[in-house]
Structure formats: C-alpha cells, structure tokens
Amino acid sequence: MTKLTVAALQLAFTEDRAANIANVSDLVREAAGKGAEVILPPELFEGPYFCRVEDEDQFATARPTAQHPSVIAMQALAAELKLWIPTSFFELDGQHHYNSLAMINPDGKIAGIYRKSHIPDGPGYEEKFYFRPGNTGFKVWEGAGTTLGVGICWDQWYPEVARSMMLMGAEILFYPTAIGTEPHDPELDTSRLWRRAMIGHAVSNVVPIVAANRIGTEGGQRFYGHSFICDERGDILAEFGAEETGVLVAEVDLTSAKKHRAAFGFFRDRRPELYGRLVKDV
Image (cartoon, rainbow, N blue to C red):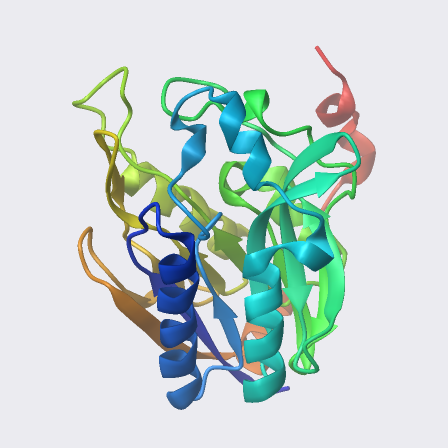
C-alpha cells in the first residue's frame, strides 16, 4: 500500500440510540462515497457519554460483542461498502464490563477486539466505575494493505501506547475519543493539549494519526470536537472545530511515511536496555 484514504467522523449524540447509530451510518456512507477505506467513528457512539456520572442503570446498556447494536450495524455497513470500521462499544463479557473496540473488516467480520487499557477516573469521566482495565494488550491489525493500530481515548495521552503499537508494526494510528470540558474547572480547555499530545506521537513515531471526537452538550458537559487527521510530520491534513458535524477525509502517503521514519532514526537509535524504569510500578 502506497497511499491510504482515511476518515474521521464528528457528531453529537442523544438518548435515542437507534438514531445515533443511524446518524453514524449516514456519515460512514458519506465518507465511503469520498473514497475512505478506513472510517473512524467517535468513542461509545451508541448514546450519550454515560461515564459523566456513576449510574448503575447504565450497565444494562452493555452487550456481548456479537449482540451489540453498534457492532452489528457497522458489520453490515463494512460488508456492504467493503471497508474497515474500528467500532467502539460498551462490552459485556460474563460478569465483566469493558470499554472495547471491534475492528470490523470489509467482509463484515470482526478481525479482533481491543479493550481500553487506561481507564480514567475524575469529575465528568468516571470510567473506573464502569470498566475493568483492558486485558487484551495493545493490538494492531493487518488491513487495507497496511497495519492499523488503535487506542481508545485516555490511551491517546500515553506515549507508551503509540510506541508499543509502532513496535508491533503499525503504519497508522487511530484514536476514537469522547472528551470535552472539565466539570471541576470550567476555565480549563484541554482541546489544544489533547491535539498536541497526539501530534507529538505522530512526530516522535513518524506516523499518520486519525482522531475522532464527539460534539454537543450532554448534562452540562460540552464535548469539544476538534477531530483531525495529520501526517507523519504532525502537519494537519483535515480538521474540524468545536461545532461541525460531518466527515474528515484525507489521503496519507504510507510509503513516504515509512521512508521518513527510517531516515529519522528514532527506531534505529532506541536504547531499550536503558528503559527498565518504565516498567517499575513506583
């Protein structure tokens, strides 16, 4: 694969779960019509971001992978349109609950599951109440003529996640997210930090990145959008602000990125024998 056309979706969500899935489906079709081969919806797009508060009724919305409405709908679309859709969903596995992602391939099959590794816990983002830390390890998939890596929201802040996926062979990284205002500090706008963190991953790993976020106000919390696609230099190829609904589509040159990655020498010059401190839990 020399070049790959990718898309990020940005939209608001309501309590109407069927309408949310239908709206995402419409945008998937729009992105496919513009040539996208891998299409990224935001995190947990079936409904509102329920982790704003601790509410035990929300556990009833979790489903096993094969029974989840979001997964089922995206499987049908992927098979019809012949593309890849990394699909975020609230997974029920026995007595366990995970913030998960099904990587759906152009046959409509689930190529694998990734369970979010880093689980935040703070005002407006009470995810530890709902989700166990993922037990899959980081995942990459051979698809669309390349190797796709995916982290989920809070994972995107961690350079270790991006680097791990790159060492597993990823050629492009995707991050579905749900992030906005901070209830404990209305003056804190993390949108620029959120974007800079991922652009930093792009630069230090010499890899294109696709990030999709939701918009709209839910229970007084405003989700700030700013979805984007950047190249391996961290240069923005396509971006939204805080209010647009729609699809971002861009073509990334993976052959060029691979050449630049080799030339920069970041992976050649790694010194893993010196990095033992990274795995000490103190």
